[in-house]
Length: 550
Ligand SMILES: Cc1cc2nc3c(=O)[nH]c(=O)nc-3n(C[C@H](O)[C@H](O)[C@H](O)COP(=O)(O)OP(=O)(O)OC[C@H]3O[C@@H](n4cnc5c(N)ncnc54)[C@H](O)[C@@H]3O)c2cc1C
Image (tube, rainbow, N blue to C red; front, top):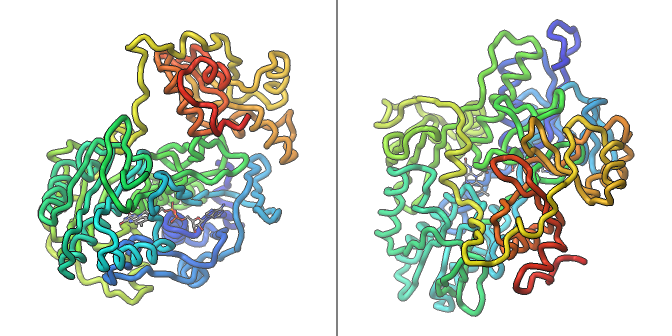
């Protein structure tokens, strides 16, 4: 960090975003760094949306709260500039907006959230406030008897499945209260058990509630499309349904100059520092932490704010991000508070209770944000009651692996155990390997010499990224200096890779779905080859030519 703690001028902190992580960071910075910092929010729209209550709105059990961002920012001691972050020039400490404006900063915190994209074709994708009316219309169809079978679906990759369970439970309570006959409700999820992330107590509490309301659960199932009254599952199976309400798959917004994963997420360390860039931090859904949840976003923002405040001269030792998962499940009757220590034991460190397990008992738990929004919305926070059973505020170190393991992951790729051709049979065994600090000019020359469309980025022998000719074009179109810009700033970090035993069919399917032209082949974290799209499609069985774009 280059910020001088004793400088007379305050550190200019630019926060890209106007959501949960951005506001939590602004509040934390004001509290911790006081006048050692100025905070400016760069956001594309003038409102802050409190989205969790969107699930309750169609049932008239809650309303989506919308706040004026200007007013919230002013109360948090920050200012707002309207605009979208399009590119970061980390070496000159400037950002560019999509309208072409340039904004200088001392420290940048990227908190742009994630972009919801439909994941199940034929389904009603529930993204939040924008889809409240569609769920309302579905309730009317149920009441009129025009629709009978409704499935609530979690696609793979959606790692905050709680809204699906809330929608299912609220719909069941709604239908029961109106005495609508013949309605069949089901939940389809890739999780092994409902709300698996919350551990045994959370999962059992939800399972019991669903059983009580007559909602069938299909766990360990990957829903893909609704066709002719059937929700199709992979690898096989179907669930009869007239309508499907599905969660979206999340992707990160493309921002030039930042390392991003194939899904557009930004890799950070436990203090929120973006890998390889000085004075650039990220927090919330936009990071590559696999769980996309408001409470987690706020905890990440707190860790980043502490690091920035300390660098600006505040007297504190910044603590790393230590995720604790808390969820308030709306059930249509008494809500359930769910809590899980992410690194703890799934049985011992999991609690479910109708009484609050944290305080104030908000849907999005932010140390600064929850009481701040409560007072802004005129909601009185009563004095804290005696701790309910399980409300032990133990915080433990981040363990992204636990989250990866218990969340709804990509379907496993098939392996070549039935004689079909595998990636290792056709891959190129000698891809271009470069270090992250190599310049774009050097890598472009290597790619030209070898007539290759991509290079793999390795650090200490381990694959950390991929740079393709498309990335080079993007960089050159942004007029970067190719002798100064480094591969690390333009590569796609943490690329999807396959093993040499993956079947060509599975690899081709992956490439089709994501639009990849190259897949690194990795064994024990070491690169052993590269698979090109043409190699994959030429040798794979089946119809993979559709939609490949060549
Ligand atoms: C229906 C629903 C229910 C949910 N329920 C819960 C719940 O019960 N509990 C919970 O903890 N979480 C819940 N969540 C998740 C929670 O809302 C998100 O995890 C949280 O908002 C993430 O915070 P964030 O700041 O990373 O992103 P966001 O809150 O999405 O904020 C992103 C901000 O960045 C802005 N932005 C976007 N692109 C750019 C750009 N290029 N430049 C600058 N700014 C940009 C956006 O306008 C927005 O202001 C729910 C989400 C949904 C959709």
